[in-house]
Structures are given as C-alpha cells and as structure tokens.
Image (cartoon, rainbow, N blue to C red; front, top):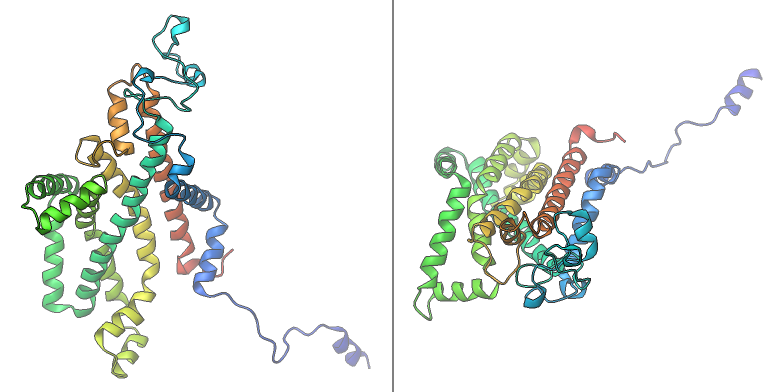
Length: 346
C-alpha cells in the first residue's frame, strides 16, 4: 500500500502521445536575435532610416534643392550654443541666426536637415542594391566553383585572385571614371546613351551601384565556395544525386538553403564598406551628381568651412556613422543568432 501511494502521488514526467513544441532553426535564430539588445537597437535604427528615406518628402521640412541665398550658412540658436566658434551677428560674430533651419543651412542656403534626409536614400540604396549586385555575382561564381570543381573551380578562383590584385577602391574610381567619360559621349539611340540618361535621372546612382557591385563580389564568392565544398558531400546531397536530381536543383534547393546563414551575416557586415565607398566617391566628386544630396558630398562641402561652420560637416558625418554602426550591430547580432553552436541556448 505504501508503494502504491508513493507511485500515485508522484507527477508523471512523460505522457504518451504528448508532443513537445520546438522551434525551427530560423525561429530559434530570430528568438536569439531579439534578445540581443545592440542588434535590436541597430535594427530599429535601420528600419526608421528606411521609413524616413522612403517618405523623405513627408519628413523633410523643405526641398533638398531649395536655395535661399540670403540665408547662406545660417544656423539656429541651439547650434551656435554647442559650437562656440559660431558666434551670432548679434554678439559681434558672423553667423546669421535663423530658426527656419533645424540643423542650419549650407553655403547656398539649402536646409541641412532636408538634405540629410534625402541623402539617406543614396546610402541605403547603395546598401541594398549594391549589396544585392555583389551578392548575386558572388553566389553564382562561388556556387559554380564549389560544386563543379576541377577546371571550372581553378578558372573562377584565378579570376577572383586577379580581381583581388587590384585595390578595390582604386578599381571603383577607375570604373566610375570610365563610365562617366565613355557613356557621356555615347551616340544617341545606343545602349550607352540610354545608360547615361538613366544614370542622370537617378542623380548619378546607377554607375555607383554598378561600380560597387562589380568590385565587391570576390569575398562573397570565396565564402560561398568554401561553404559549398563543406556540404556537397553530405548525405542529403548524395541522396539527391542518387534520386536523379539535376545539378541546378541540387545547388539551389538542397545546398544554398543550408549555407544561407553565414552568407547573410557576411553580407550584412560588408554593407558598411559599400556605404563608405559611396561616401568617398561622392566626397571626391565621382559619386552622385549635384544637386542630388549625398552624405559624402555634404561632408566634402562642409570640410571646406569646418573651422567656421562645423555643423555642415559634423551632422552629415553623424548620420553616416549612425547608419554604419547600426549595420555592424545588426551583423554581429545575426552572427551570434545564426551560429548553430548557439542553438537551444538562451
């Protein structure tokens, strides 16, 4: 009787037929990602920046190219307080105080805040489109080299080595110079003239996208090749071959989905370098075309008057730094979240 009572008093640990809820790999990664505060902050900042860029006419107080020459280099009072060198005219200085401009105006009397808001379109466009171009090229090259192997692998990897022999930034500058000079003088009704018109309509962004995309795929190609080499002999790939699956099916249905994690992390961490490349191109005059605003061109303009009007260079630089740090935080969070060794660890 005592043994039966003890058995009846203990709760059942396992119940037959009861199913335990479990998270998938991607759900588990998302759960770990949202527990990373720095990654969540970065994601919130980036989503906010994307919304602001998409609805720039709503958030911008003025048009980015609206110039009031009488308000050139004007600044609100709070800006003159945080930058003591900017002394208002009422105090014997040289700065025109105007509350019309939240962050101040540039040398042509254009609102800095509006130009920073519109400039986010350029940086985020490079982050998305430039990264997409480089990712597609890197994926195709890496998948082909890793899975096919042999002469194809040797040929493609030697191509990658040749591309790596050139400094990426110098190669981008050369490509931009070639694009701008070649297509600008193209005959009407040709592909070059059409590309030039499209580039002009986009404010010079088309060739920026192409230049960055064509010079940033080598790292992705090497990473994809290494991942494919590590999984192409797995049992599920061998089973697909035994069942007669075609090569494209094996690559894109069985191999690619299982190596996406490291690729997403690598591309997210590489995006700040794309943004920095565009900012540098605009800084030296090979990026977007005036009056299209870019944070790089705004920093370049502000650098000439930084000793007198530091706000014109510092505020665009802050916007650039915040977006780049946000991508880095998000990339670090994705790296931790997609690490298979962290699966099941809260």
